[in-house]
Length: 275
Length: 247
Image 1 (cartoon, rainbow over the protein chains, first blue to last red):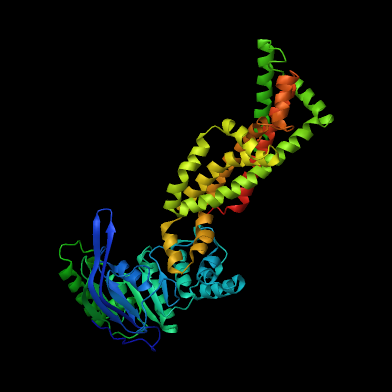
Image 2 (spheres, helix red, strand yellow):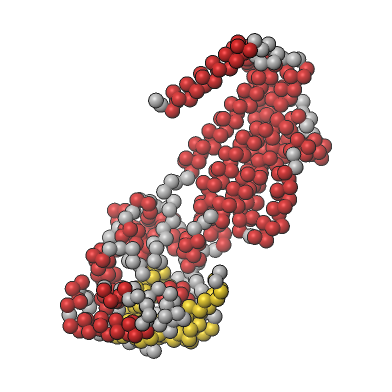
């Protein structure tokens, strides 16, 4: 299935292709097949949102693209070339939990990708301060992670993912720990960051509303083993406001995504229905 | 009440209790000398240079033994923590070396390594090794798996993972092992001296106890060992406070 980059301001970032990917891994209770024969093409510079309930293999898909996990079958291709390799600099990953190193300052945490790559400490810190400014966290530069609120920690995690200016940015429910209002604000900021500096973004979420606000295309996954149930294009102008839900076109997309979810996850409790 | 006052008070209570025990039981000085007798003996031993002469020897053994023991224990502990294979291969020997009484091993090591300072430093290092190595191994494995994956996603090399994630994660536990280690180092030095040495606080204990029947002098030597142990322990704690960032 192919997604078209409809509203990206300029082509940037790298294209991704996921070809017939199956991912199985052993667990204590036997082998789990997280994904089966999943095929997806993600164009350069598009904002793709992956949606589906827990256990539909969303995080596994991001790990495959990040090179943290190898597919059991099939392959992942970045930029028509080689597959991903963890830490090769093309992909930035913001985890569900901010995963800040507790004994480092916020600045040193954000600078971590650079210092691990061998960049000089002072220069890395200077760049980290710039990245912190971009996510509105300049005042917290010298704090420790334990001194941050949940939202500040998420921002720091995002700044760390952005600091290498990766061509592909993967976001695994980056704002899931936040309350709904704060989250809407974050979505707006993320959209602004992406419009300022377009790149390929793949974001995982549970929230249909968030998906419609952010995406060029929404990819709905089936229950485990995950496959693509449907790709719903979101052809709405940007920047999209927080009040987008009142827009009839947006409401239509929202309900069609919910319809697909209800269809492929009939037996599931459907928490997305009330969001 | 300040911490200093509490310490002082507990010391005073200890001395009063000791004095009462000697008075109430009427125990003679050659079995249990009263505190002021020991204090008087200490003043004389310090004045004559006798105490310092032996303390310097023992302190040297302890510090060198700690340096050798702790450094190798951290290195081996990192290897044990990183590799289950290395743990399987090495741990029987490490546990065996720790289980065999150091009192029995010390005379052997003394013969093998020529009976000099080297032998005593090695005996001291051996007894220090185990708690620090085990603490390091446990600490290395306690690194947060989410941070391990983060480092992997950032392309950290195995060496970077060890130095920048696993060892910092292990530091609180390593310091715990080090606290146990410094007190064991004091015991190790005395045991090593008993296996064959011409000077040191262990030797002084033997001379006072068995040669001179100078029980107060033996107590002076024991108290000095205690002070060394407390001092080193305090030093480790203060380094720990400086090194570890408490989140």
